[in-house]
Length: 322
Image (cartoon, rainbow, N blue to C red; front, side, top):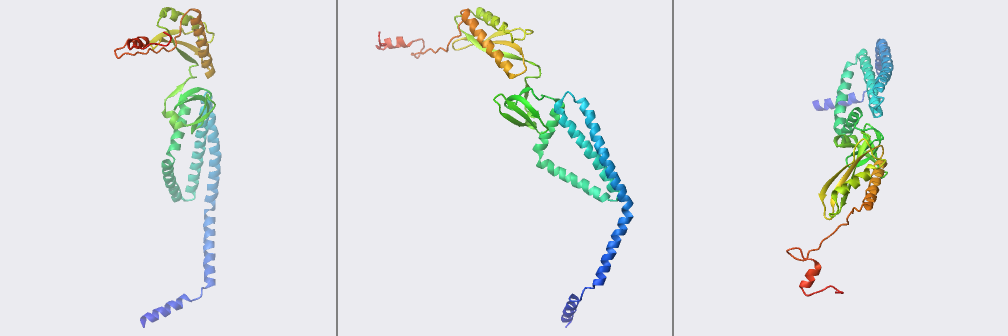
């Protein structure tokens, strides 16, 4: 009986009609409370808005001041402009964020400020793990812009590629090879690998390898080669021409002649190398110095020293036409 009574009471309560007048009164009370709270906080809200507007103005001023000061320092480093713009943007964001946090404090929303800071830290940590390669390239780009290992227009060799630097960004370096291909290299790889800068010193050495026959006078051949290269107009006369014999080759005594040139473009090196080859060849031809062809000696005896003709005679054979 008691269970039946409870069930009847529950059904009665469930079907009781809603009092619209009480609901409307409650809603009006809430709205009035919101309006009272808004009016109460209206001065603080006005002050907070003014703080944000002032912070936005000061942020723009800070960005312009930082960029102007840094541009004066980095006028001779065009690739540092990206870093200057980055620092200006960071100054803008920092001032604007500080003004926003102050405005939230005026509105007594310190809990929101704490939540925002905590959330920013968590998001930053997650993004750091997710985009660590991009972050590494970005940091490497900043370091490269500060240290200036190379400039736009210089010829470098790095990561197995050689060419002219076309553009340097905070994420990658664009290199145009001598064959005309455009190579995009991540800055982290460029910064971590060895870099050969051919243009920084404005000069380059040409090493020309050659060889003379074993029957030639090495001293005479050396002087002929030195005189030939010394007469080149492309040679840097402030540095002497050098020639060193390097090895006994299969069919020649090999040497390397070295001289320096003023270097601005890859064509300077190629032209000087081509002129040196032609000059040495012409000088050797005029002075009776030979550049021998590869020679191969065939040996037909296990103990060595037996030529083909002797081997055929020893076996009773012969060459056709004998």
